[in-house]
Amino acid sequence: MNSIKSQLIVGVISTFCIFVSVHTSAQGHHHASNPVNRSIDKKQDSCQSNFLECANAATPYFTANGQLYLVWSAQGNVLIAKSTDLGKSFDSPKKLAEHGKTLDTGSDARPQILVDQQKILVAYAFFKDTQWNAQVNLIRSEDGGESFSTPLPLIQNDSSQRFPILGQSPQGEVWIIWVDKRLIQESKKRGNPMLGGSIAYAWSSDFGKTFIEEQIANKHTCECCRIGMAFNSEGLPFIVYRAILNGGIRDHVTQEIGKKRIGPVRRIALDDWKTDACPHHGPAITVSDKNDIHVAWFTQGSQRQGVFYAQSKDHEALYSQAKAIGSEGAIISRPYLLSNEQDIWIVWKEFNGKETRIMAQYSVTEGLEWSTSQVISKTAGYSDHPLLIKGQGKVFLSWLTRLDGYQFIALKK
Image (tube, rainbow, N blue to C red):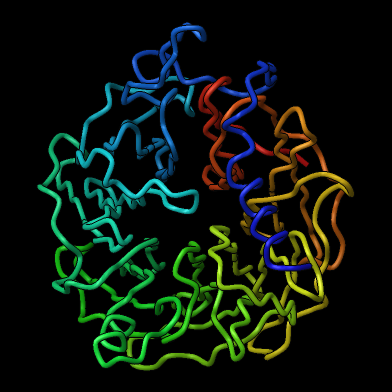
């Protein structure tokens, strides 16, 4: 497929929901009620509020005691609210940061959140200039969200940082990974411009008060795609991202990140997507209880096009053959994975020209066999990526839609 057609497909996947105006109701899900998800007059709706009906992206965190925290971006602001009834209603949102048009609200950008008892940590990025150079900020609360700190930069570096992802290991350590451009900046100053960015990471033993000095895991990565992260049996993060390989190929790789060592880069599949454009379409990863790695990704390579899934057994260098995801003829995008005891769940978007559907499958055989796909929800307007989160022994879909409200749905076999 030529590069122009590839760019067009990526653009359609990133933006098609914005232009559809027909309302379709979704059944069997929760609509967040006042004050967060207030009813709106569709004719008058110009999306000027900070509430969920005007949000760009929303990220959940589900605590052990059943509290659902949601952090989102809307109108250039970062906000947070809490639900005690599985997303049916939320308390009054708190504004954490205000950046206006400089807030990073790209199709793969979203605020991040971790909660540990009374401590809350939020990360997001905003643009420092018109050249897409960004800064990652952190915000903390020590009192369960009653008050929050002033946003502070993650690192003291004048280069660009984007697409942060937060995770907490079973041992309680906080890890943050992001796309970093310090090496790109240094190379440009030397008169040797480089494409893309780098994968950088840092970790904290005091829930984000301080971070161990950041390190570079890979010097060459796509600069505009989100990173996926999951923890293995040793409590170390496994990450998946779109790397820039020899010849300008932008294919996906995984890597284990450690405090004292950095694992090898492992290519998932030979997609051979050669492009200088930004796909804005990052991958997903989960690690099962058996320590198997499961990944899903989008590509428009010369070898295959679409959304695919593969898995790797513990510490094996090779991944299984790529399995196509989704219905033939539909526009497939935004896969997300989550393991829950013996189950592996995958969700994704399908657009049929009229509405966006969230589809789901599960596997009880570590990805060797999968259930029949099922429609979980649908909408005819703008929607965020589908996300999966677990708690109380269940797996939940978290999905932000403009027309049909925020949805928090327990998945069933």
